[in-house]
Length: 126
Image 1: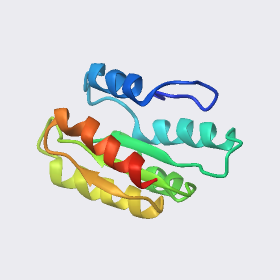
Image 2: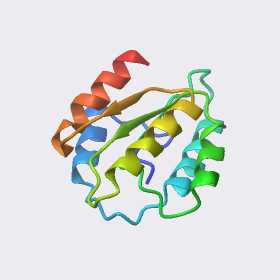
Image 3: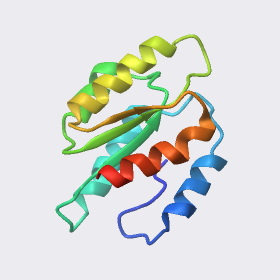
Image 4: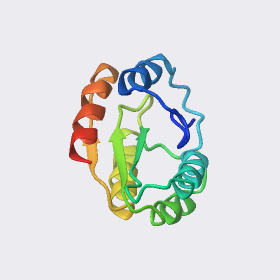
């Protein structure tokens, strides 16, 4: 899901609160999220078009399409979260690849409660 659309005004705290309320289900399409995010960035008036993807990297759809879309970003940053299943290594490699292809940074967290700190760290670097 898109937590903040380009034309929405939200505080960082409200975005962090929403992130913490999201329950991991393992069925979200990373590719679909990337497409929606790219669409939002195309609507931006600012020349700063940074995106942050929070994911375990475990793709449930075409991995090559996911990587192809990642190349379309100018600055796609990834917060890699722990996987719910044993695909953790594959998911982490995917997160690394997405951030590299998207010309962004990768921040790894080992616990869900570390996401706000990782988000803050990324935002300060952008």
